[in-house]
Length: 298
Image 1 (tube, rainbow, N blue to C red):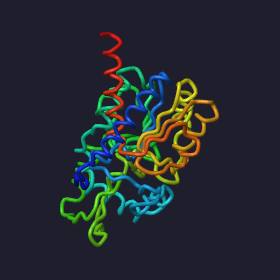
Image 2: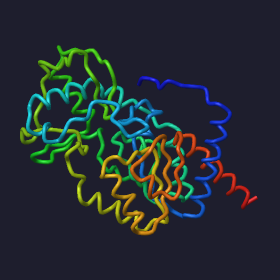
Image 3: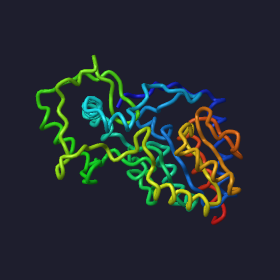
Image 4: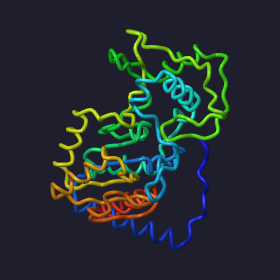
């Protein structure tokens, strides 16, 4: 994975993140068990780029639309060529401090349910027990016609077997595990069909222009209604699939805290907004809560 450009934090920035972590710890102590809703900002330290900049604008070309993928053979070829070339990077990504801190909060009893808009599976790798993958997971593929499913590593082997003479130069990594190729070099790339019915195979993720499965939305909605509060981490909430749960929390009278390095579409309804690196803020909060717990039992 390409490394993010690292800058030495200033003492002022370090103090600010520490203060934010303390504020988050106090919020969680008051709220009881919360629903955590995470986005791309949680995974950037793992080398997976985010979609948007601090103002919520696109940083990359917009991802493939579901209708184009389903209806256009050339679009599918282009997508799978780029995904094939990028999978090695995505599949070797490791959880970072933000994932670990959130898993610790679950272990300590502060998180009831974790809902992620990410498709990288890193929350599960980090040890979370109750994760709702709102937009699905890249490590599985499925057939649009018969719902046949296969693990991505096996699908990757099928792609490799079909394209042993195909080579491409990677120019940049995209947020969903695909890459930008030099000269859009995907001509001649062959995409296998479903192993059961010969239908169209796509990653088991929700593409732009595709609806989140209703039962998944209902599970998250139920979790938000029973929780003491909503914690949003690393998401600009620019897409409705995530924003709807912030609005639901507000309608249900649940406090909302947002930890994000940039603006979000729910800033105006948040009870607390902490603008900074979510890994640093979450880690500090975990440390503060652990210290408070030791103080009570000491």
